[in-house]
Each structure stands twice: as C-alpha cells, then as structure tokens.
Length: 449
Image 1 (tube, rainbow, N blue to C red):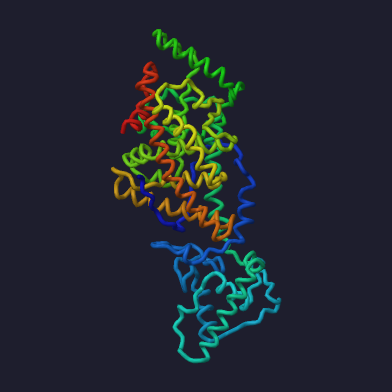
Image 2 (cartoon, rainbow, N blue to C red):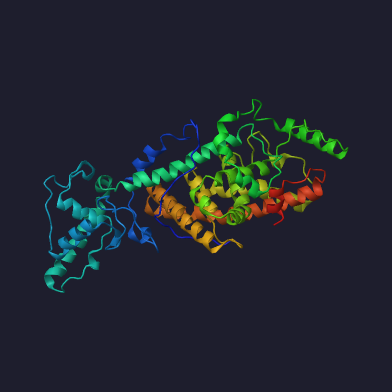
C-alpha cells in the first residue's frame, strides 16, 4: 500500500514555464476574480494554518510583510505590539464609524484593529498578565467580545482579509490551470508521440512540447465512432498476424501519449527543475502512471462517462475482449472502476490540478536522494495548503477540511489504479496482442520496473 505523507506549508513562490511567443489565453480567464471574491470570506484557524517549519510571508492582521508568529498567528511587530498593549492596559476602543470601517479603503481605527486581532486568532492567553480580579474581568470581556464577533463574522470578515491570499494563491492556481489548458489542447490535437523511442532522460532533455500546443489542430473527424475504430483495429491486427506492417494504418497509443504529456508538464514545474537528473527519472517512473490515469479519468468524468473515453472517441472497454475472466476483471478495474472515486468525490478543475501537483510532489520513493526528498516534501506542503484553503473558501471550514481529506486520499487511489493499469498492459502486450510492435523504452521501463 502506498503511504501518504506531507504537511501544509505557506512557502508559495511560483514560477511556471515561460512559453515564448505564446499567445494562448488562459482556460478560465475569470478564475482569479472569482477566486479572489470567494477567498475574502475565508478564515483559517491558527490550528490549521500553523504547521511545523512554516515561515509566514504576510501579517494576517494588516497584510504587511513578516516572517514571524506572534500570539499564535502570522503577524508583524506593529500588530503584535498593538495587541499586547491593548490587552496589558485593558483597553477597549470606540469606533467612530460604528464598526463599519473598511480596512482596505484605509479606515484603520483602533477598535476595528483589535477586533481583527481577535477574529483572526490572536490569543490573549499567550500574554502574561497579573493574576488580579481586574484582569480576570477584562479577560472575560475579551472572551465575550470574541464570541460576538464570531456571530457577526459574515459582515466583518469581507473587510479584513489580508491581501496575500488574493495574490499568491491566485497566482499559484492560475499557473496550474494555465498549464492544464496547454496540456489539454495538446492532448486533443493531432500531436501523436506514439512512436517515441527515447527513454525518460532523453525526453526530459528536450524543451517542453507544451509551448508548441498552438501549432497542432484538432483532427476534423474527432470523435470517431467506436465502430470505425474497431474496424481499424481489426484491420491493423490482421495485417500484423499476416506479417504486414502497414504504417499507413492510424496508430495512437493513449497510454504512451498521456505519459509523455505527464513528463512534458513536469518540465514546467518549479520544484521539478531543482531536482537532479536521476531524481527526475526516479520520480516520473514512480508517479507517471498515477497522474496519467487521473488525467484520463478526469476528462472522462467531465464528459459524463462511467468509463474511460479518449479524445478521439475510443472507449477502451469496448475494444475486442479477451476470453479470460481474470483479464476482463483487470480491464474493468483499469477502465471503469477508476472512474468511480472521481464521481463520488466530484473534483472541479482547480481541485484536479492541485491533486495532480500533490502527486507530482510525492516523495516516499525508493531510490530518491535525500536532497530530492526534501525539495518534494516542501513542494507537497505548499500545494496541500493551497488545496485546503481553496476548499475551505469554497465550502466553509468544516466541509472544506472534510473534502480536503477526500481529495488527498485520491492520491493513494490512483497509485493503485496505476498499478492495475500496469498489470493489464503487460498482460495485453505479452499474451493477448503479441503482434504489437515493441514498447517505447520509457514505457517498458515503467511497466517492468
């Protein structure tokens, strides 16, 4: 069983590949605006936000830069001092605007600033105070005030969200969505690397083909009917049996293509570029099938299908069937059952690309160097936190955390279905269709590793 690992982190420096002369618009150009609008209503409790070895970048109270936690939340020295002074001097302030200050517009009264400190998790219990009756009464007032604020948070929070969540997280998500747009465009085009004869190292040495996605067009006859595809397959197989190797018969191996697309996308990820060559190969050999099958399943579910459907119309489960019940069970697992978890959890595009990014950052891999492991752990923490915050913004704290657990569990699920697909491909190539040409070196290495 594949182990899951990783903890959230806020280290969110993002740089995706620069695609020269790339004029392709993002898949969802309005994503940043809609995401920014939603995230303003999110409050992340300190117990969720703060994790081991985290270094914050912004103060959650005022949005200023900081590298420290004060009283349990990321905060700058100015906000720390203000909060400590307010508590230690038993200060309660009055808002001249009747608690309707718009912080983003520059309204910064002390009353609303203290409210923000309380609502965003600053802990007055962390301040050492004299044990007197006066301070105990003041502490009870603070507790009461915080309870009132929590009941009113729907009106307060939209005015107090720090700006970093509308910029850093949007940039991270938009970068992944744009990368997926390029990948999908290439996948649903005439691009066909089926005859690729290189190994993973040679594929990685080339620039990412995603930058050329605009050069390919979608074939005019897609989707092709299954009847036509079955006839083509029978003709191809008949010629192979007779010893004829007709290169004019259309050939497209979707497992080969989707694995190469996984490799091409990996080249654009910032952490992947930090790995040495051996670690890159070890990582892709291990996670390649999981992300390829996840890709196939996500776009099949998007079509409303209960089985894998390829962009050209091919439905693998409907191709000529072997007679063995064991092989039929493998086919069902590889092409049908793998769809069920995505149907149950229900991923949107952002959740899907973040799950793929988490899988790209998997680090519990035999043969991975210690340096590579550290890089990937840090990257996985980053993507896990972005996913958590996105879901809690979308669904609320409790339901968002629940779905986060379900989405992260899919990582293990698709490692499993990758293994089943691996078993099926080995059997189909060695027993059922022995007349197929040799597998590409990279695919053979992954399947027989």
